[in-house]
Every structure is written in C-alpha cells, then in structure tokens.
Length: 481
Image (cartoon, rainbow, N blue to C red):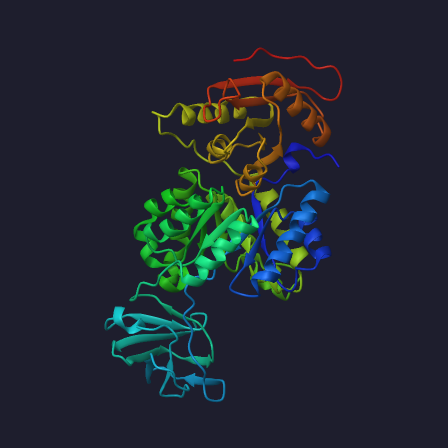
C-alpha cells in the first residue's frame, strides 16, 4: 500500500521481546504496527531461546520485505541481595541495617549482597538503593559488614537488585557478558547494548572484540550511572549509539535532574551523529491498560521534540497485556510530534566538506517541495550526517550491504533499501522507481541526491543533485547542481 510522504514516521520504535510478544504472530503484528527494531534482553531467558527469536525476526524480515534490526542487550553486573528468611522483610525508616559479603540468610538485622568486595569502594554518606529504588540506605560505616541507616523504608524481597548511587565502580563488561557478546557476534545481531557504562574505557573491551571479529555491529552505551555524565562527550565518541536508561539513572542522580540530563544526552548524541533512544517507563501504564496516560503521551511526544531518534519500549511489549496497541500508540504520537518539529540548524564542523554538504542538502530540501533525500551509502555515514539534522522529509538510503541497511534502521528518518547499482544514472532510475512504487505522489516534487562520484569510490561525498519527481506518467529532469 502506498503512503504519502507526510504519513511516513521518521522516529524509530524499539520493542523488547518477552513472553507477551515472542509468538511469531505477535512479532509480525508488532512489525505491522510500526516496530522496526527488536531488543532481546539477555538478563532474562536463555541464550538459545533468544537465538530462536532472532531467527524468527529474520524470517519475518524476508517475508515482509521490511528491514528489521535486532539489539542484543547484555546483562552487565547484576548486584542482588541473597535469600531472606520468609522470602521478604520490611525495613523501617531510621533503623540500622547491615549488608554482608558472606553468605547468610537475610533477617531484619541485615542481608547478603552478592558481589564480592562491594564494600571496598564505599564511604560514609554514600547512598544505596534496594529493589527498584524504593528503599534507600545511607552508609555509616563501610565495614565489612557495611553498616547503613534506612532513609526510606519498604518491603524488601529476596533476590532484588542493589544499586550503588555512589561508591564502588563495577565492571561494565563481565566475564558472562564477554561470552554473550561473542555469541551475539557469531549470531549476527545488528546492535549490542552495554549496561552500566561509567567511563569511555568501559567500551574499549567490547570494541576490541567487535574489531577482532571484523563485524560491523552497532555498539550502544546505556547511560545509567552518574559517573557517565561527567565523561559523556568521550563516551558518545566511542559508542555507535546511546540509550538513555532512565530507570537506574533516575536512582543514580536526583530525580528532578533527570529531564535536563535526558535532553543533554540527546543533544550531544545527535550532534555527533549517534542514534539515541529514550528508555524506561515511556508507556508503562500500558502493561495493564489499553490506552496510555496523558503524561506518557506527553513524555513520548517530548522525546521526539528533544531530538531523540526513538524510544525503547521495555515491559510494555515484553510482559504487557497490550504490546501491539502500545506500538500503535507510539506510532500515532510520533506522527503528531513530527508535524511540529522545527530544529535549529545544526552547524559544523566547518572544516569537514562532508558535514557542509549534508547541511546544504537539508537546507535545500527545506526550501523546495521535496519528497525525499536520497543518499547512496556503503558504510551509512552519509545518511547519518543528514539524519542528525532532522530534515522534514525521509531519507532513502540505498546501500549494497544488508548489515548497513539494518544499522541504519536505528537512525531517525532513514529508510534503508538494498541496492547494487554503481553509477548515478542507474541510481536515479532505481530511486525514482522505488518512490513511484511506494509513495503516493499527488503533485510534482523533488528528490535531493547526496552522494560521492564516482560511486565506485566509497567514503567520499562530493555531489549534490536535484531531480524532479512527478506523479505517475511522463517526467522531466532538472539539471544536476
């Protein structure tokens, strides 16, 4: 079915696959509803089961002809409390509570923290959160055992997570993560997300494994630690993409600072041409309800207005009762938000001809009745440079590489299409044919081509061309600029 250009959603929707969505018919329904990216959370389930889901998504991609990307989300260092007598206990504000390194059954006096040597990096005044941040402890004596004061009480269940808002630096890539990453490389994931990134160095080990395997896989840094915010520019430089993991980040920093930091992360990632996704509780009420709250609609809308490439749905599609409806609502919200987007011109660096041409391309597209920007690309860099400027029209990225097409699925506004043409004349014909087949054209418009000539030399961008794209029927050409 043909679409009008204004009906094409440019923001991307990443859906987490879980028990509520892993059935083949549900995965297909999610694709039809608008999900282009699927996240497999390796904190849950078995690797073998995740690989089965990956193969099912690949099958749906072949059958539908839609380019789909799959993200492997590594668990990272999961710090949890040990067993509790009776499976739960209640902590009261003001009580003294101990955290032990050795194995023991938890009582109202204290519990085991299953992370050897966790107390070494603690100091008096550090904050520790238990569960989903519901219980807050303040370190009085690092110990061991660690003596804490309960600042905010609540019901504590066995096996719940421990979050250190301050204190010990945990490794971002554990031995288990390394095994799963190597599995993900062999399986052919399109993106890999690294949890609890604190410094640029946290990304280096994963990057070396990817380079050793000679695989073009997107490396995403999940920003969920306070330490990451102080080195954000360097982390974004080393990553291929960013996820604003608001759950743990909202514990690591004062909650009222989260909206500002979210906008700052998005702004830096966008400036550096790195796809950035907003995650955690974007539409959490739809786990149980068929409609989002007004606050959730505003949250998703604002993510687009801030410049995010898209959102990451977690429990909404993994365990919720309405996974397909959630994606449908996200689609509707983004379509409305994109009607109002008006980003200021993103300049520079002005010593890079590729950046200058991308800037000119988007400026020209805004001043003509443009249908699409067309960017033949081998690595995807040309399309990303255009995408970060958030043009009003979609970007048709023609590439000979399927892995590039899937990676570009993460980027705002990019429609990746496989192409093997190697000269401009054939490229123009292919682009015109694709648009005539897929786009409802009611009046003449223009295509803006941004490419490198000769096309046999990848890595250069030196040509901007404008071509008329009329409704079906005879067409004319305008001169190349």
